[in-house]
Length: 267
Image (cartoon, rainbow, N blue to C red; front, side, top):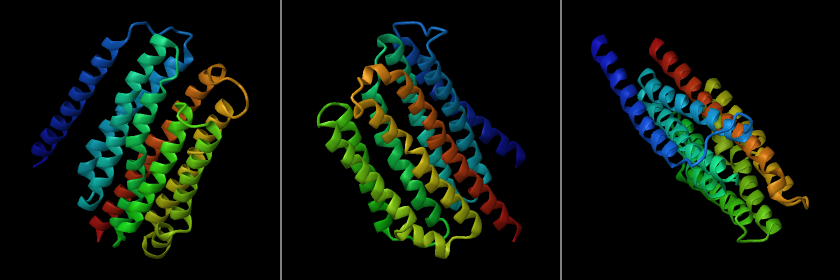
């Protein structure tokens, strides 16, 4: 039995590693310039892409350690970091090759990964109680409004102030749902202490960690300064924020999944 388990782990590791190696080589082949040692933005793209790959392998392998009802949550965590890693390779190449901010790639990444992060709130509650579908759809609507508002402003399709207000409205709607709305109430009333703790930490990441993005947008586009003059700092800030908002977010879910699975196994 142990031999079968080890072979399963090895097969998963090889499969994930092979896929990531292919994407990595494709992204590197697309680069037309070499990463310079004083290009701290490019270095940040590279470091975080490596961290995202490591996190992906970790989350997928740890699925075998948790109970069945938690496997989907870890799968989604792995998908978030996998999708982000692929995009980071290409964003790095855009930056190194052109010196311009890879806005389109970043928003394509967010358009996929941010809804998946929101689904995690629904999934961890669904693992311990019945959750109405309305919770899922309200989180999705808030996420889409927030992302669309940010993108149309940064891409120049809408004036920056109206776009900023739309994006903030979507974010506020999400915060209401996870703090005071039905999702927050289900967590407070039905979840065991470990899930409540994870849920609270996750929503503070959405509050504090996600605040980095509108702050960056504000200083980049609404203070009168040229976005080009602040893009170095903005890209580094956005990149570091993704460590908290994607990797740390997933690790919180992993921790509660392992805790609850081990607790159930003892009883």
